Image (cartoon, rainbow, N blue to C red):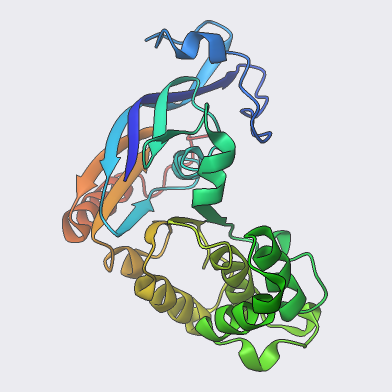
Length: 263
């Protein structure tokens, strides 16, 4: 279960990004405990106070570019810390228990290459397996199991650079799954993929046992979720069934066709 309690994120008006260093608190962390309700003159709020309890196995997050989707997603494993409020994952606070939360919450980025560090799929997944503390004698078997689960076992020893974009995304996903997270957050994992691989990755996410929070522009994929959040201008403006939320998002975007005055 994921809980956001009156969470907001503010950045300096100078446009510096929010703190993302592992375990580090934002400069305003001291105010966090007081839950200040207003931004200071030196701050710009990029996610307004948000309270959510996410219990569904599959939650999709949709919204326009720059709406705050990624900020919301990165709050869930402590990549971004709240300026005010609390984020808890299975009872652990992302601020106080950041390391434990990051072990529990896997994160997949849109650019798979940012997550691939070893020469071959076998070596890349093995690196993740070692971090889980699996006994040395069982690691090779675990690597084969993970690669097989995403359909990459036959490419285990191929150069990562020879993989297609879709295969690289599967490998990035495999590396995260190898750490056995309870929650998987995917920030637009299919944005750079063609239709074939977008469909394949979406289907794979739908088969996972973990709770999946999927940030996406693919409305067909969003319709497969159990619950859909619509984020707009740093606020959750719709939250409900896939059909209702996607319809609300379409209506919202229809009012902005032809406008270019938004940052």
